[in-house]
Amino acid sequence: MDILIVEDNKEIGKLLETFLRKENYIVSVAESGEKAMRLFEMYGAKVVILDIMLPGIDGFAICSKIRETSNAHILIASARTDKDDKLKGLNLGADDYIEKPYDIDVLIAKINGIFKRKYAREMIVEDNLILNAVTGSLKVDGKDVVVTTKEFELLKLLIENKGVTLKKEYIFSTIWGSDSESELQTLTVHIKWLREKIEEDAKKPKHIITVWGVGYRFE
Image (tube, rainbow, N blue to C red):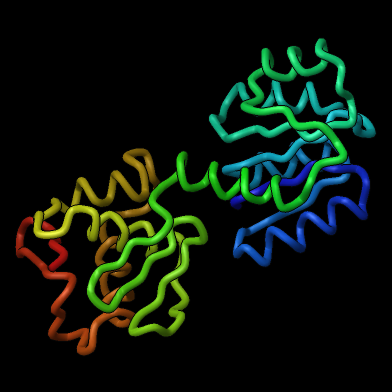
């Protein structure tokens, strides 16, 4: 998930969700602290927009809990404007603190900036391929092509190492993790799926080249 909005005002939460979805972010909204923690534990988030005054667990407790295990960007958006509240939020690990009411265009510009700086170059263009590193989407010959998260991460890794043969073991541990329960064959299957989506002829690939006994190279 890209963004988790933690906001008990349903109107504000829905409005912000709608605007962010138009920017092609994957967004979830939680109206309570308990729901926010459930969603974060299940799906994670790159950016958390966090209100302080919530039913049940308050925003300060959520901020502290998230920061125990994640470096997600936490942006507190609160009507509480006291200096002590701001300092408390920042000391608990929040990256930013903005006051309500805020200008939604300014907030979205701030979020776009976070993704560009913190998570990757926004657009990666290679021959007939365009990858959007913020939304995880792919265009081939100008047309949208549906890819899974792992397919996208795999293609991005190969492109970023264009011309370099990457060992299968390195690719697998980078994308799936060294402690993954998946098997190396998973990589072979994902390479096959990617070729079917980006190559003119998947059986005679021009982009994703197999280096027998070693791994794969992007050309």
